[in-house]
Length: 222
Image (cartoon, rainbow, N blue to C red; front, side, top):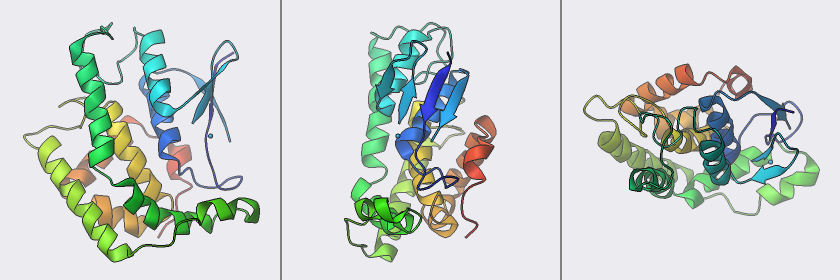
């Protein structure tokens, strides 16, 4: 039985918005592992058991499939020593990107009210628990953080966040945060991320490396 990915949508046929689910989807594609898709992040393993949490799933994939491209050290020779200081440092770098690049409260303050409109009445209350914050100021704050991060990580001909030449799990953190906004507003995603030239070019490289047409085609046009 193949691995099964359970993704989140606001309603049947709705946009794929969950950053955690996207990181898991990218991890499975990165490992070139076949998987079925269902519509939480959760994957059902080959033995029928379940594994939750995108970071735990990433660690599991690196451990169980050492012959496949490593998620945190995509440039390294296979197999990667998962107990090495280099691997630990790479995992911490990915976590630091997630912590420092996008303030979760600010991002969710923009995202939640917009996404709530797409949910059914039964689930809408959960997503409207936070009042809408001052959007313009948040967008400006987030965009400045993106500019700082890309100036640091994508300078000197570096193509990706995880390594200079190949994408990996750190890139998945950034892309999953981008997708959070893109799933509700093309303009917000542009203003925060794509208005930065380095980020826009990186985004095109990520789309080429991980096409995922079934994800992108559901996004709003505006």
